[in-house]
Image (tube, rainbow over the protein chains, first blue to last red):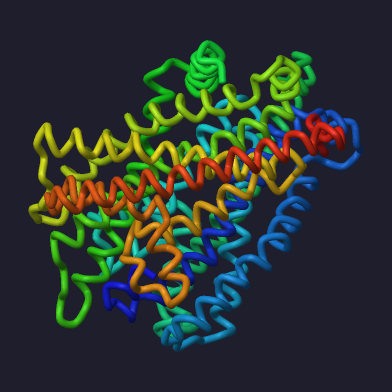
Length: 228
Length: 280
């Protein structure tokens, strides 16, 4: 609406795409990263620990559930945005689907990694989430392109922002959805590769961190200690 | 409503917000969000307008968005507190305890709202000042704010007036939160999204289609935004006071509706036995 209200129609597609991705980012932060912490507060985490399933498998299940649960609202944003604003699209659909899948995979892997961090801490979770949500949205390009030619940020900020999977995903999605770029474009391929690497590294890191916390918690008897 | 209970609830609200860490860390974490959202909204306009053909960047538009985004963040930060106080209070058994103490649910919710109002006023003022300097230097522009003790006083007065409507909205949502067991956590986010569109936070409501724009045009939150912009950007005093008058009038209607809805919901929730209902 802001883009449209000020006569900046060519950017409305970016904003709709941002609206779609921000739903997933919110889900990662509130329902992945802090989920175990909340589960600990209500006593569910003890049940996870006593179940024979590995904790990382439970988190992968939560990720898939989170993606499925968020998909209807994200689809609604996309549909309403498309119907109301008719943004110009020049999409290479196989590339769009691949980028979207890879972005979600690495974004949810980041959520899994964050969940171990939040488990280690406690009541800070809500405040840290509040503090993270907007700044990450700002620099990761859900509202406007935060990397490349349109970015208002200096190069150092762009480089820092590129370490967040959402930033690379947003840029790659814009390229494939609005600028007709497909596989074989050097920059897009690099972004896809970086997203895949991030996904694997974050998944590995989250698995290791959770295992470490689980073992430490078992040794010290604090794994299910609640804080009020 | 007991003043003593309300003052105690204000203290509870501050303890809840800051006592988990040192106050400086708590305050900083609470400032980061509004600051980022103000910069984001302003940058959306900057990126769009400077890349438009022909470029259409206008510093007074930037000031318009900056004020709206900051005040929207302010309202969004404290008007949901009654709803969240009930939602989290059910989980932590605080709300049922408050409830069984005679005549204390309303002072408790009001006190928590006022505590959050003070906090968010401070964080938003800091965000406004920081974003003003950051955006002025990054965008190489002069943002046309009227910064005098009088104009800042008028802005604070508008913020005070807006408590009436914000508390009313908070109580309306609280009436629902008494019965809900899951959705009350998400409800404020959805209402906040609607408020951003309908309160003239980022663009004039005249851009909305009829009759939506007519409804948005008379909302007390819209009048509050307009009054604040008159204080800080345009400096037209007759308009400022007429918007303030409309904000008070609308605020009283929303507050009366909120009080009535909350009273009705409270009685019904007690009859149905759902005051402490929760699901895992």
